[in-house]
Image (cartoon, rainbow, N blue to C red; front, side, top):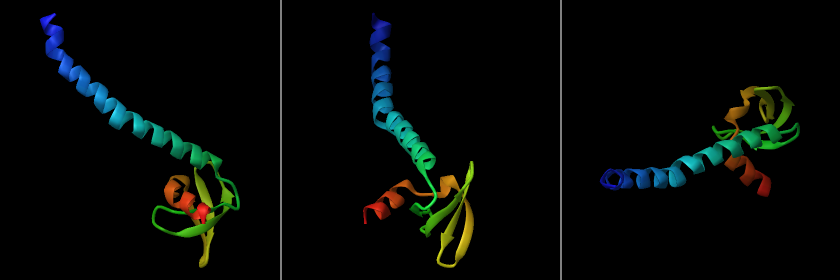
Length: 90
């Protein structure tokens, strides 16, 4: 019984860390993957570097976007979920 009491604070710390740090991060990663999967041609997006564009073509891991200055080829992961959602609300 004494050994369990010694490890109880460590177990409780792990549980707290899991629910407040690890689990929300896993949920966010899952949402970002779903966002990337839901992209379609014609969507207006904002990249993580702040480029506003429209999707012209989709491939497995890359996209081709059209900006005011021309077309660019980028990785899907370079699209910002938060900034694109804020742009869609406008």
